[in-house]
View 1 (cartoon, rainbow, N blue to C red):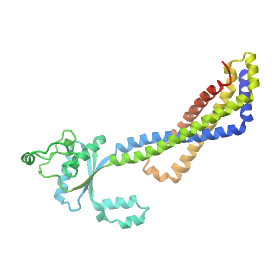
View 2 (view 1 turned 60 degrees about the vertical axis):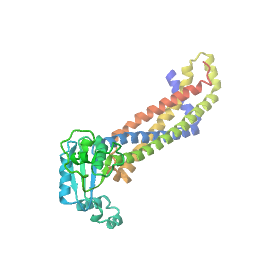
View 3 (view 1 turned 135 degrees about the vertical axis):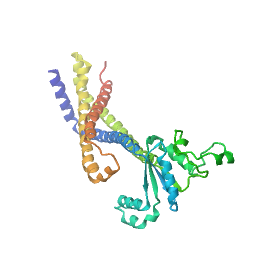
View 4 (view 1 turned 45 degrees about the vertical axis):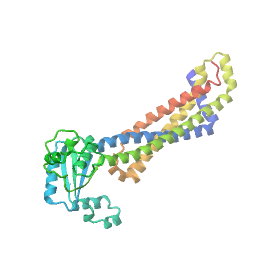
Length: 335
């Protein structure tokens, strides 16, 4: 009997303030949509980091006038390094073919670039990709490209002439068997690029977008909570006589507050369901539709992750709304 009365009062209260209820549901839905998108983006960025950081390579771009002997010596040096897993050589024609495939949607750009504009390079895959920055820096130093960060005292010229040039992994602090025998820096290297630095910039941009979405969701959440509090205050004020009568006949505070709290929770759960539908629409029409080309760069968004958002958003919305409603009613119901 009590449960039936409470549920009846919930639906009566929602219908009595139908306009404010609709506004509360819509505000909650927008807030939870932004929150769900932010959570999915956070989880997706974590997967992308795990996926791409394991595939990080160090690109060693060569001078176009490098001799075959210099290239062969550099390739042997890189392959003999114990920190290196594999080495792939890409000549200018291969680089140009890959360039045309990557930018096939920009024919004007492809026409403006020729094979001679793209330098040959080595793609070095390390056994431990986390050390790519140390390996790249050591290789730059060994090639004489980056000596500004070296704060060690200048060696004696005679000692430098007698000492072999260390391999990149030796400079990075690991044991190696690849030691150069040349007195001069490694010849033929134009630039060393650590792909992890490029990825960090990309993830930094994505992280900024995520933070913006989170800020918007928090702002909308605050607006939704204020609307919840205001709706409950209006509902409690309109039923102040009934509340006073129930207090006189000995009704407990929980019994009096339950209909109002359940109204807020019902609106929050309905808003969470609408937010879930919005996330599904985003996956179907954006991630799998007009933005499907991004799946070649981004890790695919799984349905399991989207479905996970429904209980998470419903739980967050219901708990926050219930707590807000409960404390709001303390101003109207004396303990």
